[in-house]
Image 1: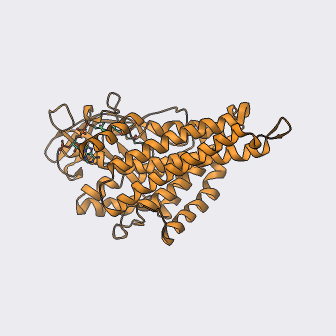
Image 2: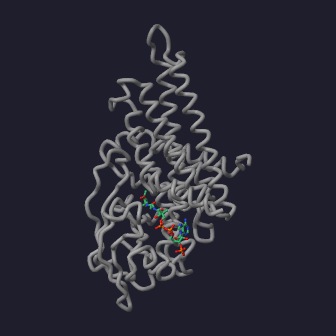
Image 3: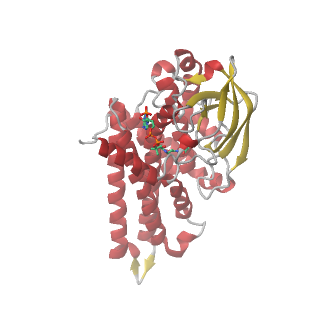
Amino acid sequence: MPVTLNAEQKMISLMAKDFARKELEPNAAAWEKNQTFPIDAVRKMGGLGLLGMMVPTEYGGSGAGAVSYCLALQEIAYACASTAVTMSVANLSTEPLLKFGSEAQKEKYLSRLASGELLGCFALTEPSAGSDPGSLQLRAEDRGSHYLVNGTKIFITHGGYADVVNLIARTGQDKGNKDLSAFIVEKGFPGFSVGAKEDKMGLRASNTVELIFEDCKIPRENLLGKLGQGFKIAMTALDSGRIGIASQALGIARACMDEAVGYARERRQFGKAISSFQAIQWMIADMATGIEAARLLTLSAARKKDQGVPFTREASMAKLFSSETANRVAYQALQIHGGYGYTKEFKIERLARDARATTIYEGTSEVQRIVIAREVLKV
Ligand code: CAA
């Protein structure tokens, strides 16, 4: 299927590129170095419609759709990979509301999330429940007018800045994925607090924290979807999230390749630019080919989502291939830089650290292969 873009998609991509090159790229290195979460830039992205791209206009979103989202997110990631994961998770946080929320919940939260007035996050992972979220332990007990929640979530992207949390909790006695439910938590709810911040290898301008629930009271009306639907809600949200991370990885990969090409043209050894050596050219050829293949897979997954047809398999393929490509490209781009690439003076050092997370979060490469194999074998 040819992947052609319409005028609106091209325009959104250019708008995101313009914003990213002016507002993010000049600051990205300093934000990363100082672990500064760029909250002002994130709010501006809300104003540009970049945080509610799947939210229809009647709920205050831009309704731009998944293809536009994937193009815009690539441009944000090219300039600042940390801000890209913020954008990805903010958009992901609207999905459970869109697909499972009541009309009252949509009215209350969606337009404010889409505009950036509120920042949303997604809380699934726990210390002993990562690839296997069905084993999570955080418990929500039915107390009539409210649910009483106790437990801890970890590795929560921008959890320290989030106003609204999509929380997955255990609401029954089953130990597997049947008795999980989803809730909307506001940061002011009593008993909810933000715990320790992770000191990460990369994406250091993205705030990754622990969320603590100690007798936290969640009003009954904040149950999202039906009781026991939590695992399905989480998986549905992750299908969309994986297109986001595939796009983030693609943006990082493109930035790595551009750094490598620029350096290879400038750097002279043995009396000529190293770009004239076949060893370097082959690495660049492999990078360009991987990036193009990742771009097509990611756009294809996004297009399926826009068409309203199942895209679980395609989202996992895009996430797997793009994130593995980003890491391969980052490795080769750093290799081309030689010793300089191993210093903080050169941008490739940061990009290589940022790329590393993409094969891990929102489902490791191993989890993506489980999803793809199951989808292939079931037909
Ligand atoms: N959409 C809708 N429903 C789905 C689904 C999907 N994509 N995948 C599974 N389900 C449903 C199944 O149909 C099944 O329903 P029934 O019981 O009614 O038949 C139910 O969910 C259970 O499915 P499985 O038996 O396949 O579940 P499993 O326990 O074997 O898990 C898994 C499968 C793919 C490994 C899944 O656990 C998984 O994706 N794990 C990875 C989790 C993950 O990505 N964590 C990332 C954390 S969030 C993060 O990183 C965000 C961030 O901040 C960057």
